[in-house]
Image (tube, rainbow, N blue to C red; front, side, top):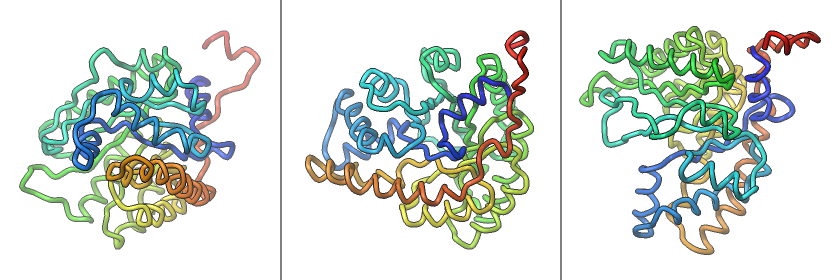
Length: 308
């Protein structure tokens, strides 16, 4: 691994090489959830909500995944967080079934700008099924992002999500497991630096899925929460870390209830409950595999900088 990518990964993990990352890059779907319970909000109020989520827990996470407009700029300017920063590239339309969803990029944003502003990683959400008509085009897009990340020496955190072939179909838990394992092998081979992976909601599939991922994943991987409740997510994270995951990249499982709360109730939840949840996840991640187990460390030769 290049020294630049290795440095970025180190900034997004703790001293033991484990990820405890807060994800709050959600946009339209998060805003809808907030407005459903409290009425319309403007852009500044939406940005302030994200900061209100992040600030009480800043010391408990190794990195934050946030969007540029409502997250990254305010985080940096406010000097409230000094850990790693990850950014998405895509705009996600949750009104379209994943099988029909095209990859749309955030306007005026890209790998080069994430690197220039001091970011530490690129996140790309990718609904995928190996038999989709768009599968080959999506693989080519991933290849282009891999190439851009290599050019700018910044890690790609790829989030491949198994989806059914049509809106009328639904994957069985076993199909979801099999596709997730297949995608993991495919995108590791293609050059993703970290995999952000989901496991089936059904508990009967957790052990087999995590075991299989631990066998085939040749890059570090972290567990996403995918909308499950916090206690369920903790049990999923225990199995994932046991089978070789390098930690968690967690969003709604730790802070989603804040969308339903207002005023002092929201503040108390974010200042008391969310930090306790992150402490519990940190304890679980103490059993995770260091990211460097699957990343060959850079050559520390005295002349490394000459060919860099």
